[in-house]
Image 1 (cartoon, rainbow, N blue to C red):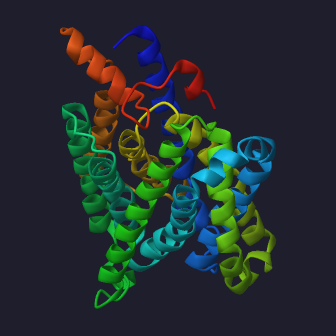
Image 2 (image 1 turned 90 degrees about the vertical axis):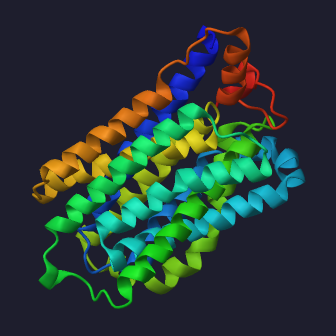
Length: 333
């Protein structure tokens, strides 16, 4: 990989990692508003955050409106996935528990993303991605098992139906996360700036969530604390986080981005220790180390022993829609 290609992919990985750190705060933040339903939390976070993205990108959306209209099926698919993801994700955590819900939702996204790229874009699974995904998923599962072992059985939800339902919703969340990541990446690769893409896709998704917020959101204004939680969720992890994620998607493949976002599980576990006061067993720290190891595998430069291998790596790091590398000017947000 040449210096410019590595620099672009490294910045992309850093942007996605920063977004994942912000997303990892959502579970802890939601604990400060226990009487707000998961549907309301998801609707205010992604709904208001998505509308803010549209406002932030208004000029860019208008400038590239013709390009976005010609690709309306991809825009519509991404927007529908954006609207579905938070409802499934927060409901999954509510039913199956924060640990299981987070791991299933975030952990299944890299696999779904890679399958989408394989079927639709005909992209091969790379050895680097497989190694990173295996390490990251193994670490996420260890985190899940460790937190499950810490759960008080007397306070656990009824396992008769809630746990399987939560896992099912987590799989839906992982699929929709992969879908809107793929859709945004595909649109960016046609030459539309990441700001316009994220503003259009997330703005439309936010509009779709407004009826849900209107129906379920009354507890958000019942107290200042609930209102502050809702405001934080919309502004920081969703608005700022997805601006960073959009910049990252302009530089790395969707499957790599969703794999790097496994770092969210480590951040969530760390905050559970520091803020909530939970104590993590050794198994959890091993899992966190594996997730961090997967990030090194995914972001370190690839060997360039053979010219063909280096060219293939460059094409994989910044692929255009037709499979060719993206020119540097097109990768800027």
